[in-house]
Length: 141
Image (cartoon, rainbow, N blue to C red; front, side, top):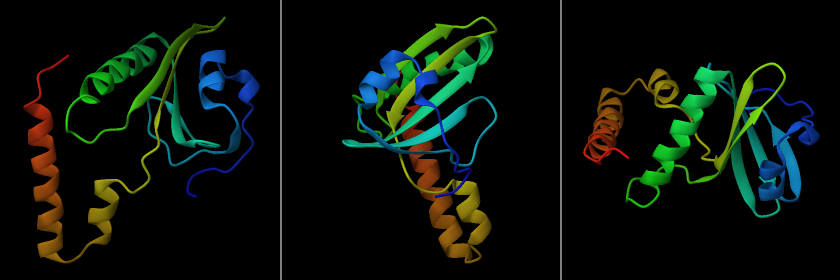
């Protein structure tokens, strides 16, 4: 595991998320981005990523991410499958919660930083460019 390994209180999570996940065996916090908190969740039936975005702007972006991933789920493009999106208004700020398939691995930038062979780097960048071109050729939802 990477990131932070600390207890997470599922009682603070929305019912829709907890109900979908079912029996949770383990929760860990992988390396984070900026716009949301990501939890990696191991359950009895598989591994999921749970994203929490706080505030109107970031929860709106998360709702759009859910819509885009839902649209891409019916294509041949390999993306995490979204399962649940819910919005919750708290006393402080709105929260967006997204449950999707957990995809293990490293970011392309991390792999490139560790790869010194120019041919391998070229193959990685070519494959990324091909995937990006396929994504951009898909009609917007």
